[in-house]
Image (tube, rainbow, N blue to C red; front, side):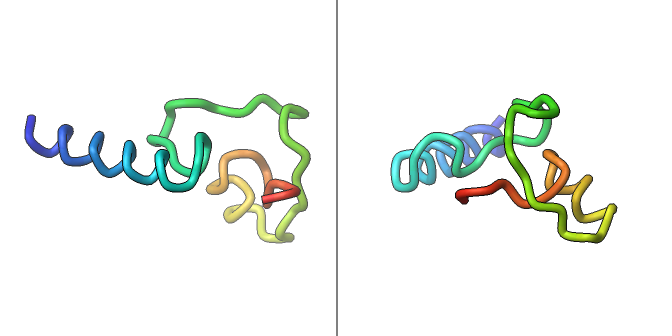
Length: 59
């Protein structure tokens, strides 16, 4: 599909410009608890939406 090609192209360009891990497709890689050190935002819905339970340290 043309939409998928456009999305792949955009992800590729962002990855090339900002490095691996700068962007990913939803559900592509789910970090395991403890894999990433995080700082909680204090808002549970936001922590869950971020995918790792808060704001990743060092990012």
